[in-house]
Length: 259
Image 1: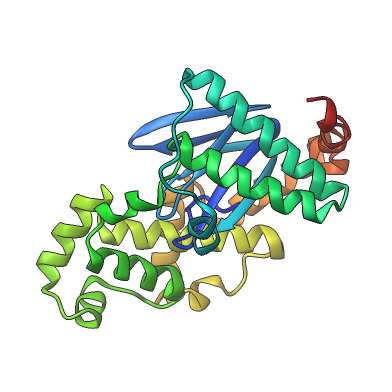
Image 2: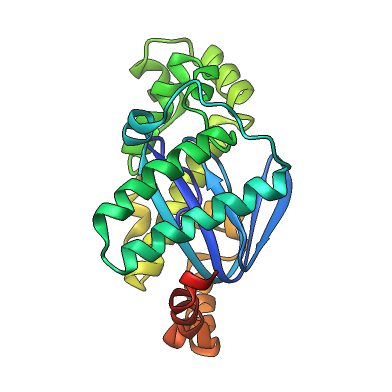
């Protein structure tokens, strides 16, 4: 599962079954079945625990910005009402996609984009709080994360002083550059590991000079070495009916129209 927001995507996530726990701004947040949340560009949301089924709708920021109408008057409502409103329209989009009603789905996505913006789940203007050089660095990391990136490499790439870049990155991203790169790499590796069902060859592919450093970084993020991480997930798939046949997801999708 992707747990870092891509620099070019806004993602709306709906917990169809089970629970998901993430860490945001040093706090643990748990989302239960039926809850919805939004990942904005550059979000850093380390996954703590995930047991269930997550439905994700991703929108490229260029598309989002194109259809995000400005000067929209905010509807007066409490947060819980806005949350339910967003969820209802998200389910409408998913239902139309499921039925292959593509035109209706396109129209509903445009509505959804504007509800996301209207209720301040994501505002395209917010990203301007980041310095241009930090945006460039993030974009570069998000594309070249398989390389052995270092602070000095990035400072040289963007013609800035390493100490200045380090301080600015930590201040604006609330995480050191080294930790950001480490976590980004490890989560990308974990995702690919779950897809390929193997632990072989990743440390070379992702720019680590030796297995020891890779293993240490993986354990610092997930608490276990790569082999145990994959083994634990395989056991979870065997022991949990949700992962055998996704019956809960099927029942959820079948009942979307009445949600």
